[in-house]
Image 1 (cartoon, rainbow, N blue to C red):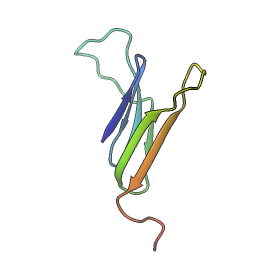
Image 2 (image 1 turned 30 degrees about the horizontal axis):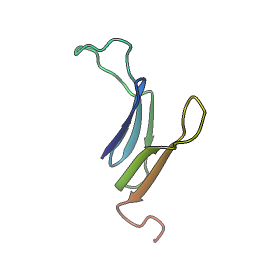
Image 3 (image 1 turned 90 degrees about the horizontal axis):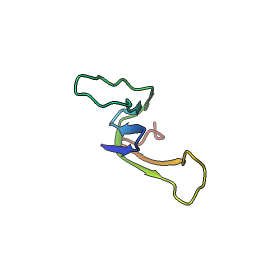
Length: 76
């Protein structure tokens, strides 16, 4: 569904999870990278948008995550 990358990490957004990966210092096709963090959504995601917040002088810039769920989870 979406991804946000940096020289050090990758954040991937899927229909049911958001995963954070740290990139190895040496890239090799035989390396298998596992996520260091996983968030599972309670409902299926229909649309997700990942973006960095610009204009902030922190070393690690915050990330904006906009999510639209496939069903209306607030209506019973």
